[in-house]
Length: 606
Image (tube, rainbow, N blue to C red; front, side, top):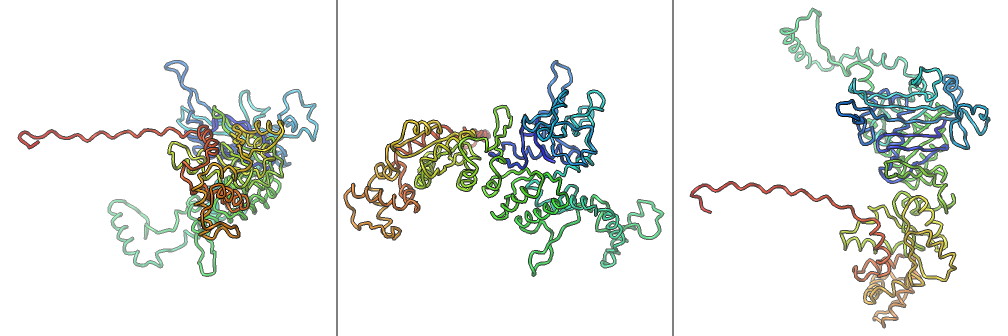
């Protein structure tokens, strides 16, 4: 089964959202945009155990903790404001179809909607398929002073008027939904607590029958005191003292030590999975191995579950890259894509993002009213799938996850402009650092590709800034650049090297060349031992920078400059970018009241 639509109202950081999915989905976006909230919402409506908790939701699960509408009139009763999460499932398997037949409807795959009354004649496959609509409603119950939640079939033709049929836990288990939170990896995944991955495997395999009863029976018969005879006098003394206050007719001993409370719930919490990593190490509790090893263990459990339920596994997984090397990140992403029916993942890692196709990657953004909007990367203009995969690890994903992109036409500018930005920030504490503002630099590798990337970032909702050389171009080409960028900067020099040579003081340029010569970093590039004329120095700098673009010499030269020595053209380009992302106003610290000075006693010296 697969989720094709998710609607969220009044849940956590999301006031409203209506998202469409088409198979595997990678959710990307800046922090606090709502990625985890979407995963939690899926768990609330599809997870078999979530609504069984007590309480299933709490105050801050409601948007802005707003779960009561004030009364319209003074003295009236407040009205509960509910959470509502709804999904549409397609690719219904035979078992679910048999159990939920009366609740089935039809989904138009082209128009992406459920057919309404009177449209049954249009239910022609393959464009129209069977679907199942579910919704979870959660609200505050003033009479019980508790929060309640329940999942229902949205289409309940046999229910009483204004009522819906409930979705039981047994039905939800058939959906095969599993939610792996990042924090669960090290604390619950390999425990036997309810809902852990190990517990899921035992349940799917049907191997839990008798486990707890047999374990309890063995623990009940375990005589701990036999190996600790020194405890017996102490326990007997305690029993004698208790006998003075509590009457008992139990023959013999009335106290006994056990290693457990002999309940199933307590055993679930105390049983531990042990693991030995090397030959010289005894097995230790799984929590004590490295975080990366833990995540690989989780991957092994996930693959086990996929083999147990190959036809119905829907995974939601947060940030699979945590504490993992790149090759393992790629393996987890490939597992999700190829071994599950549908996967929802969140990530900030280019090694994970690059494994998903652009049409599988949904960029989330927030509206002014706390609504969340999802946009497929493939729907963004100007960038093909091959380009997306090629540049995923070259800064493309960093820009996508931010608020602005500074696009330059070559490696020299890509290395040099951040140096100027850093020096501006160090010299002026009123400037918000670009990385904190969410503005990243991107190398388009040529001027010809700059319109493509500018349009791509702009279509994702980012502010775009272009910086490139003076060149002869048609009016159409120039207009393409102007349209692609919010700030379009064609500087007046034929190359960035010429800009540096013209605008950086010649004394600083010679100091740079002399340093190259003395350190031996100049290689085969000849630098005289005595300073030549200024125009010769500028020519040497231009030649050096052009011939050693990959060495980062332009950035090295600018790094040695004082702020007033930096190129005015670059300063002028960056200044309005900083203005577009002003530093937040700091909250003034409240001054502590001055300590009161007691009045001097009469006759005391002043």
